Image (cartoon, rainbow, N blue to C red; front, side, top):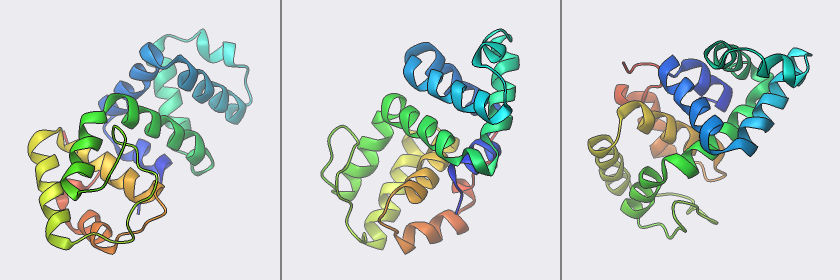
Length: 168
């Protein structure tokens, strides 16, 4: 399954840039933390990155976040984006599964979910949300949660609509 750094590396450049722009514009704390992590990985001062134009800086940031050693920083960026900008998708998915949540955030996930319920929930997401965002969310959900659902893993591996990088 895809790790956070792989998700950022495989997603379309447009979506990766949207995620960084969303953080830049409305989540300064996350953006600054990501920028500092990248500066540290690149062995430069954060101001070096800040002086670059935003498009140039974001290209460098995505390239860096796509490295295996950057999985934790990439995961923080993706989680913040999902919870803050994709709340409707999270709420739709968890609601369709019948999992209690607080605006898309769950304390304890069940150890498994019924195949038919999961399939219906995924189909609902695909019908209502951008396919690439759905693919990123479900792959991140599968990677970042302690509960490992074999039926979701199978869907992610076998359904081409859930493949990150296969979207325009």
